[in-house]
Image (cartoon, rainbow, N blue to C red; front, side, top):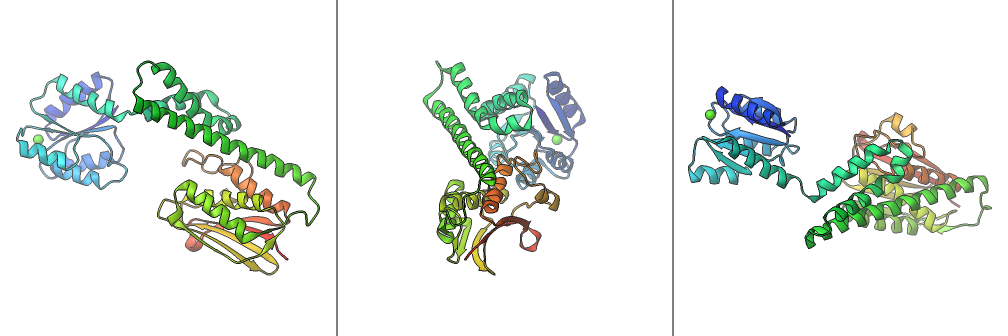
Length: 358
Ligand code: CA
């Protein structure tokens, strides 16, 4: 683990650092509270912090760290000469996870850290570890895309096989939920792939004009409701659609619009609105999906193609490229197009499906 020590006394700081490094940890050392808060931004796995320090004391350090959203969940252990119960209670009420009273033995320190590590690593993370291990074996992007959801399934199964005789009922339920989530992701991805290839095939042998017709507003409403429910974002969704007839089957239009709404939820945080509108404009019907999230660069928008995933590694964007490719092909096959542009005020993305409408 990477452990941050905040301790003003050089001798104690040095002893702790040696002890931790001897036990295989890496150490960030701060000689005062201010430096400690600064180093906490590097997200160590654990913080050991003295209380009595000149300038910023330990209570102020934990208070400052609680205000950094990315550091709030880092386990925090106070080190102190004060054995007073009130001090302990105050430390715990401020969010400290443990309390070590000086002088402490090597065992005390290592035990306290081990206890944190155990609690830090719930079942979910152990499965995640197996998933990542599997990841490394995969490599290529295509297979990565196709197999990623199965990693959760296999990770869960592996865990069940290893602990079949000893697993507690609540842990069993947790692992089963992980397996189910992976299987459901795989199912969604497979359905998208089937749709994508079907759309590609139709580019070659299109249906004669007028084969399909649907009420666009009904399709959009279906897509919006379904997608928001799936993402748990019903409260963030605003839908406003004029009635119109468009040359597509309701199921295909709903799926295409659903892909755009899914992306909008993906790119924005809960609480940020996603607006879906449908308007008749000069013989076309424009369905706009607008979010206020992180947005895409012009280059990313231009690069949208099947299986093209922008900014890979910075966000979890599974299947996103495929979803946009489906929306684009669905619109294209009906004589329309997909347009991606920055949202209002340069924030977020506005995705537009423009369809011919009589
Ligand atoms: Ca001190």
